[in-house]
Amino acid sequence: MPAVRKYRRDTSEVSCCLKYVIFGFNVIFWWLGLGIMAVGVWAWTEKDTFNNLSRLTNVALDPAFILILVGTVTFIIGFTGCVGALRENTCLLATYAIFLALLLLLEMTVGALGFVFKDWIKSQATGGFQAFIIHYREDPDQQNLIDWIQEDWLQCCGIEGPKDWDRNNYFNCSSSDIGSREACGVPFSCCKRKPNEIIKNKQCGYDVRKPGYNFEVAKVIYEKGCVQAGEEWMERNLLSIVTGAVGTAFAQILGICFAQKLRADILAQKAKWH
Image 1 (tube, rainbow, N blue to C red):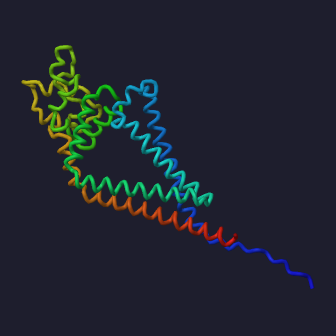
Image 2 (image 1 turned 45 degrees about the vertical axis):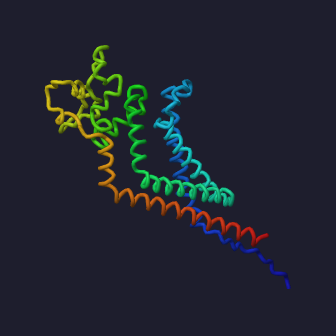
Image 3 (image 1 turned 120 degrees about the vertical axis):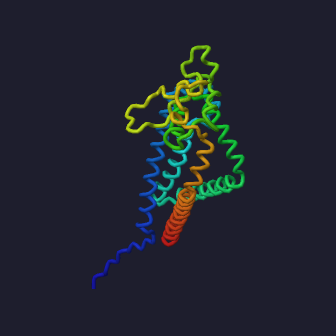
């Protein structure tokens, strides 16, 4: 009687669904991080920062640097999760879970400190905004950021009001002596939008802080400071902020659990065959 050949059956315990869920989500973050990092490096290149390192004195306030930092962290986390899941690499999966845990711990710490030290956070934000105002014409990224904050996000002007733009050499009222047309004015982003306005008037903020200005200032520019506007925005959107924070934390915890479960399955499979 001929012998019956027996084939070894694959009894892998690794869940393909779990494996490719982790891979699919993290490949998105991998490319997202790479894109953000590329934009930050491009912005630095456009400003010639790499050839003029003296500009790194205010690097923490540089939007391009922040983009590079966020992009790098996102890229590393996405890479470890993506490759770790695809290659069933337990070391990369453990690294991915540790990165997520550290990020979650950092977020919780920042949230707790922000709640406890609200006044300190406010003073730091005020100091940062002052630096933005002082260097408004020197860094195009900071200029675009402050214009977006004043015009599109908070509809505000200055830290406590339009008078704060006196800190900038171009908008200082004494700059009229040296021929600055923007003296005693504010940037165009402080101006209130007119209905059906198609082309922005870049000169709408000229002379608005001069004594005897011909128009009613309150109808031309925002008079509320950005610190107060930011606090009011936080109060209005507190529920959305908390919901977003809880959702992000839950997604990170889920990612940690999924990575640990996949890692445990891979180790169990290796132990079975050895």
